[in-house]
Length: 348
Image 1 (tube, one colour):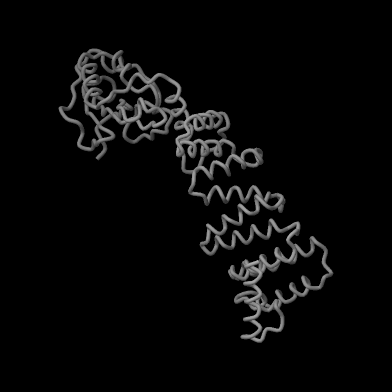
Image 2: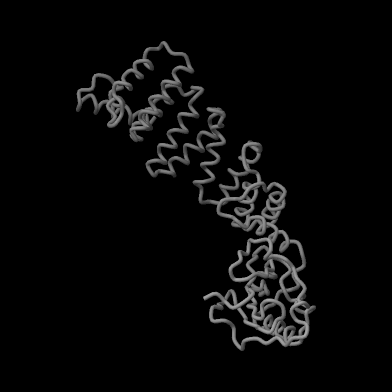
């Protein structure tokens, strides 16, 4: 009602101030639009000689003309008036989708989201150019929402209703992320478990999605007996094992989830960095020493220790220690682990 009243007011202003002869002149005189074309199109629209599909086609042409002219306020007014005049129109969902898009183009994403939600709740789905209107609305609502609970709601509906039209792997991984944000660890675990066999392509922004999900599952399900309450305790245990060349102790102390061994130029996401190896190949017949202090780049959440005297290719290693960030398990969250090894002198 408010939208119809607004349009009526604009029409009155147009008539009184510019001498418009028709209520349609408000739209026909859109700056940058083809006035002659719009006049012809409105003539067809008002002729009462068009069938339902033909009216839709003409309405789309008018919308396209206003959109090309970037006159989004007039585009919104035109389509809102179209819906108001025929509340049961079969193409109303499509018109409202365009209104939502026009609001987004004007920087009013919150208003656009209201329209997307309105379409989902009040209008039957409509397929245009082989695309579902409801699917488009759900996708936009997921992108626009900053609330993980709402994103979960929309994404679950998207997965349930359109399983063959989405990248299931990506949707399940992002669903797990949002469950993590809410602290729903069981639901996150379930989503990541379903994600792994569904993965078919890289997820933009998450190059290590497979590794992340697998580590979450492992941390949630296996016994975590390699963690230490303090960094000093961990370094002491590692130092004793190195000083005695005890490869078995070193293997026992290292993290059992996500442990890496790589040079400074390698990417942690590289599968080769996750290869397990036998410490005995690096400790036999040699005396391993370590720096007296941690590397200067160490901080309250991660630390580097420089030992040397290892056999094989690299004599110098940097041991990487970090606090475990896994709030799903309060017993280990915030404890320390030996998470990896960098081979060679540190990059400057």
